[in-house]
Image 1 (tube, rainbow, N blue to C red):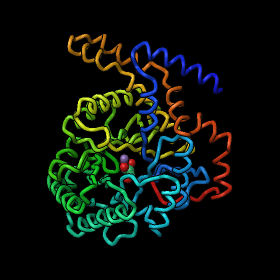
Image 2: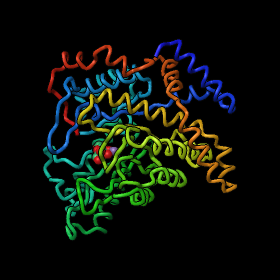
Image 3: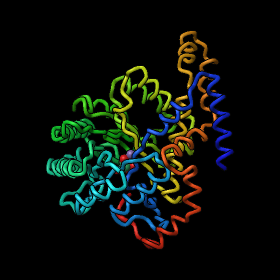
Image 4: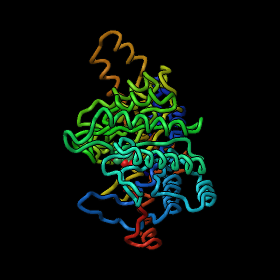
Amino acid sequence: MSSSFHQKSLDLLSEQLGSKGIHINSLISKIATFQIAVPSWALGAGGTRFGRFSIGGEPRNLEEKLEDIGLLAKLTKRTDAVSLHIPWDIPQDVQAIRQKAADLQISFDAMNSNTFQDYGQPLSYKMGSLSNADPAIRKQAVEHNLQVIEIGKSLGSKGLTVWLADGSNFPGQAHIRKALQWTTESLKEIYASLPADWKLLLEYKPYEPNFYHTVIPDWGTSALICRQLGDRAKVLVDLGHHLPNTNIEQIVATLMHQNLLAGFHFNDSKYGDDDLSTGSVKPYQLFLIFCELIGGAEENAQTWESISWMIDASHNTKDPLEDLIQALEAISQAYAKALLVDRKKLALCQNEGDVVGAQEVLQDAFLTDVRTLVCEARIQSGGEADPLAFYRKEKIRAKLIAQRGKGAQASGL
Ligand code: PSV
Ligand code: MN
């Protein structure tokens, strides 16, 4: 888009929104300050159990992962943090990693523990980790989480995200109540070691890798456990961790109502944990989630600052950096559209039972083209007007392949 065309579109939008009493500058500054963390595992090609196709030029170590996020930050200005996964990202030299991150203006978002692989540990997680019937295995899994906290402390992180693969594949395999009890007790031990200024983000997921029962399958179970841990334990909503057609915006509203929303792992899905690019399948759902978030924060259910924002995706077919640029854009657009909702009018419609009117209010915001707005926020922050076009024009992937090789990749999902 030429800069004069951009300016014309911006003027037009400013006029259009101005007639509704919306000031474009305050919108732009809100969009510009909204930052979303990127996980270290989203930078390489993922795969399925059937195979993995390397994209080439993928990061080979933690330093290169930081460099990729630094590049994303520079182009998009929509991310300023990385979320590490232990043991995949254990820093060899903490000071050097801290320095590198500081040079790239990247901070360390929540740390992720991993008790779903064995990675050479003495005891196997085949029958579960924090929920295992064997106390020695539960202890090993607890200690792993404590080690993750220590690494996070050394890097300046402020959160621990726990996602458990624990569950069972067949009826009768597990004692469902005991598994839940052991999980809760293990998490209590982890929570007791959580620094005072940290939070614990507890994920849920209905199925996979277990297909009969999962110990923490839904937001309700996660919330029940969090309540038993303490105020700093909250529920993490990974958009892909729901059965088809689940009303995720309602879950978000309910959690906010209880001050129990830890944050998000953004992605999209058609079936389950497909890890598709955020907003690629259900952009309206994403918009409705942001409507609940903005409403919840405005009405003081939970503060905006208390919520963590992160992408959780794995790419089988796309260039991961291109995909992340698209995801950051989709999230910014959903947020921008939700900011346009005339909340006073919506409240009026709700109070008067004007169902049609309420839908019109939402559609009016959702159908507004906010691309110019998001682009302007990026330009004002010093980013690229069109990061994807820039990435392609500069042939960044080809340069990364030349530098790092065709097939190499650090460990990850
Ligand atoms: C597995 O489902 C998963 O995608 C979870 O969402 C975690 O957040 C992520 O892997 C990293 O462990
Ligand atoms: Mn996740």
